[in-house]
Length: 230
Image: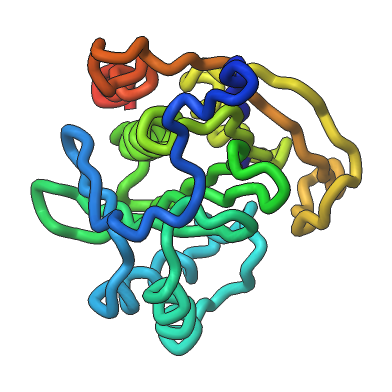
């Protein structure tokens, strides 16, 4: 999936205090109902479990089942990684604050040539869907990228067949920029009418709050909508 945000670049010679580079200090963030934190070894079983769900993997790149050995190797690779590292993706574990249960992840990949640009995605276990958690987690991630990391643009690509993800991105005020045909490999999904494929690019235009007026963007305040409407 892809979201796209743009900000006017700072004047020449002015970085605007932008922070572009590995966020080595990151440990966790919070929204009203979620904790978004680094992955740990305690997440191996739950990570393997939701990645093995056919409905969760349907529009994703990995094959099922996803073994605990694969999960362990992936999580181990994240231990020396940091968010906002140019040329790399970083995945954040999403945890239900009230129960402490690991329910999914959000991810951000930072462009190697222009670290002001990032791409985002979200994956939740099937039992956590329909509660507004995906939107709340993405709202936190966009707030982190635009406010904390001062990104200029955030993008996301969505499999055109994934109507649920497209609706979620629309709810986040994203703008559909393009419909790319055969731009990437997608799992074939057979329907009664045959096999369809394709992906669509979406975007949203956002602005950072003026200095001294708080850290929250309107995106984070969308969490109330997700709680109300799922």
